[in-house]
Length: 209
Image (cartoon, rainbow, N blue to C red; front, side, top):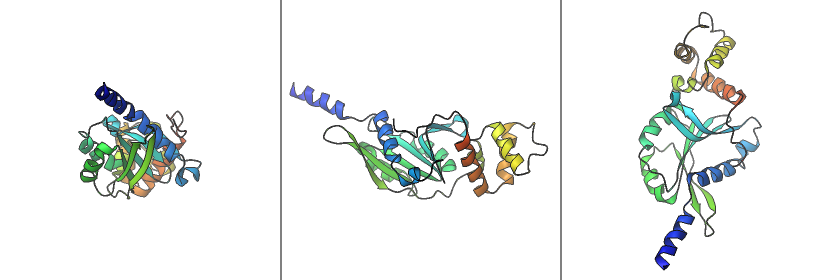
């Protein structure tokens, strides 16, 4: 009986993805970079590279910062594949992990990625502990970044830049390529961020869950 009770207690103490997500978003909502920027946007499940991957939480302010959750109930099987996409998109990237994966993630992910630990306290409540700050990613790929844009958004940016002539009826892949090759990486980053923050109908997660 005692053994079964201990197993049941442990299960109750296990934090699931939704617990991690809620704790992370609550923590982010208190950060200076969110409080000081009324245009800052926090999004759940941002699709990347035409659906080849998703990031659990993305913060759009002066940069694009991705947060990938790996709870103790998750595995790390897809980390390498996810990283191959994330490194093309995010200015900064943080892995949000439970105690089970902390050591493995520290060994597995590159040094520019941040790490945040979320664990249950004695009452089973999630606690957030920064382990390593994310550094600026120097491998962002302009073409992958512009794929976050819808077709009409891409055309509007090209119009603003005076580079839309002859492009109005082109497929979106051609538009993306034209924008990525005819615009500096810093401009692309700025225009993509501004466009995404202005987009209507986002699944915004700015308020804590």
